[in-house]
Image 1 (cartoon, rainbow, N blue to C red):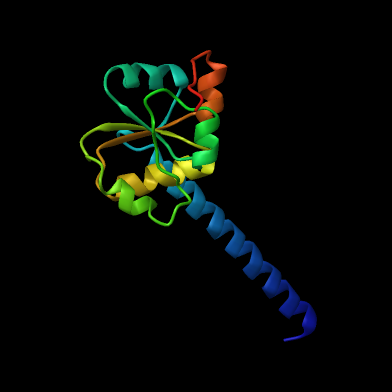
Image 2: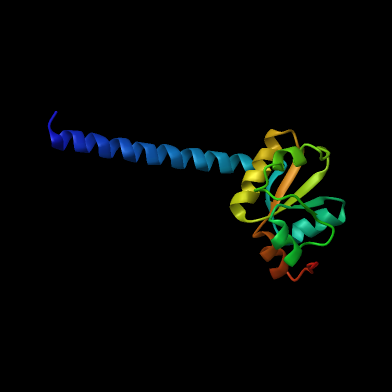
Length: 139
């Protein structure tokens, strides 16, 4: 093969890799939306919270202390023991995840994979909650 053909094959391989990666990401995010999993608006989150859902704020304790949903439980997604702390929670309770979009989607997927029955990410996290006019608690 000449250099031109090799260059084209390398370009094709890179493009194939990018497309395959994009498809895997799309498929993993679509899993989050199946059944009793996926994003909910702040309004729906408030309804679920009022019916007994537990709000898990997965942001750092520093951000949590600067403002959080009243009654929420803080488990830092980036802590070394995030999975261990999740395993201490009941799996038949409705959970609402409050965090940035990427971490929230990952947390929902992780909880789904670990047998939790119903988990939803609050769209836009704490900002979505505040933008809907709902109060936050500051410590």
